[in-house]
Amino acid sequence: MRLLYFTDDHKRGTSPENRKDNFPQTLLTKLNEVVKIAKEQEVDYVLHGGDFFDVPAPALSVCADYLQLYQQFNVPVYTIPGNHDLFGHNIETLPRTMLGFAARLGIVHLVGREAVYLEKKGLRVQLTGQGYHYEMDRRDRRLDYVVKKKDCDYAIHMVHGMLLQRALFPGAFYTLIEQISDTEADFTLAGHNHLGFPDTVIDGKYFINPGALVRLSNHQQEMKRPVQVVIIDLSGSQPVVEKIKLKSAAPGEDVLDRSRLEEAAFREQKLAGYMAEVKAAGNYQRTDVRVLLEEIAKAEKLPAMVIEEAVRRIARAEESLALGDDQ
Image 1 (cartoon, rainbow, N blue to C red):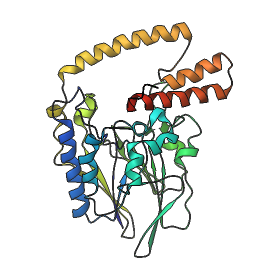
Image 2: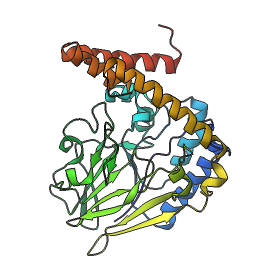
Image 3: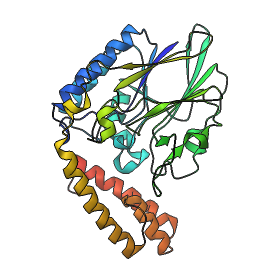
Image 4: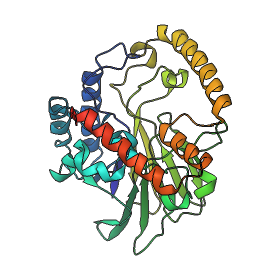
């Protein structure tokens, strides 16, 4: 059995301000190459790590070419929802999103905690997934990253979360590989972190994030990193993992606008100063509105149901704005 994995293609109809090229056309070219690789490598399944779209409900005119291209995969495509695929980071809104719509049409298959079993020539693979949600990388990491292996030769778990090899700055939400290394999954395939990380193997278990299929920021590391997909070959006595760089992905300096780097750095400095004042005034440690809500609720000793209702209302508001609903 052979599988192809990639993540975070953020399909959209406009070009980010940091891009110098025609982003939608560039992405279509990349996806065409991924389809070609899947056929040339004779893979049996395609796995996608989330952020299928850049917004939960893009216009149909934006989606048509992308979804038509996905139909060119001659094997099933399994995916999980990323944070950009949901309204308000609320998994309950998935049926009303374009990803949910694509799944209903059978263009892709959504994977959850209930295992899907893939079989070929006596080989049985357990496939599970954990899409993004509000408490990702904040609650007990085992709930999202750790799975049990049952009635299979290999277990693969896809997760859209900030899985890292080493710690970030204080206050950031992330999960370290060492925190979930006791998972029984033979392969933990991560998305969300666009920069990716080198393949990590602990006790024979693989932790893989090849990086996003797109470059959306002009971060220096984005300039240098390869754009690639992963081929996982389970047909032999031992798994073989191979990275394939996309030939259609131009060098970062050719498509990312470096002239904006200095301007962005200045804005970040000004924002950091502003947030420092906000934190000093309110003693809040986060910038995400949902996390601020939680900290305010704790400070005011409000019941948990208050913030849960606030999060639901934020999701509804985002959905209404996206759909042009004035109600």
